[in-house]
Length: 300
Image (cartoon, rainbow, N blue to C red; front, side, top):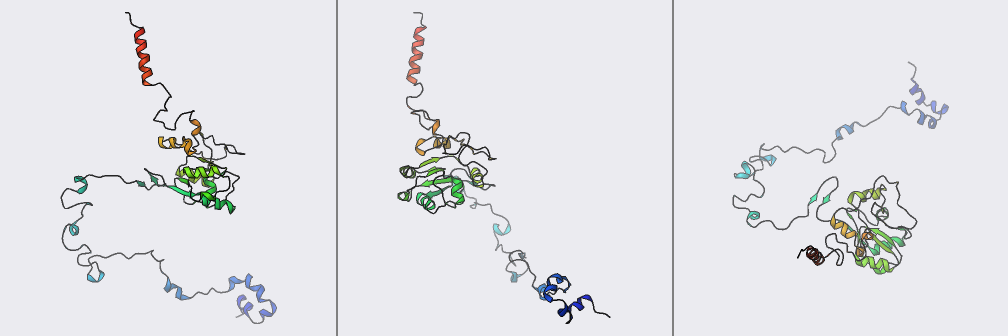
């Protein structure tokens, strides 16, 4: 029987006619596949992929035998006990009542904190260090996007608050637009020739700002003046403005350098509830006017 093509190529005289280096990349499919049979005996699941079922009541050797892990007698063995059950006597929370509250943390697609905000602290010495390293450009406005891109802050949830630690190291005039800032940090930035503007952000808007889907500065109610920049309409999402009274009053306050402080008239305070002294009609004036009009209508 004549040799096959594969046997002919593997013959000793074939290497003198055709170089083996030329054949190896072209005829690799002709060589038989070799695999060790020991791999079949070593197959197993990944660690933790399989958990052995607990077989209860199958004898003492399993550890869950005679009483199946429930113990001896009582309500806990025969059935279930409601949480907080105190044997039938009046519970403590009924006798003494509940005091205080817990800051509710609701797990949703985005976690919600109903009674507080999770502000990321940022100190001035770190901002100045990032500027000296060339990771932040002091000639442009420094927003949450620049801080996140340069890794100056990470895991921002509800916003960033600027603090005054290391304020003596600030030498560059910085234009910072941030969620909140302390009074000492504002004074240190302005003493170095810079400016601080606080503006409103939500947890969802911060994610869109970092991704580049939202303008980090301008919104419908903002009047933030940025040199060489104007509000852009190229972003698919719009930056929100505050709707709750607490947030509106914070960003209307000039002491916080709020971006809504332009809405205040001269002598007017940021509060939406308390009236500014001297603004509006007082009760005494209204009573006096009513008395005078009543006197003019008298017949005798």
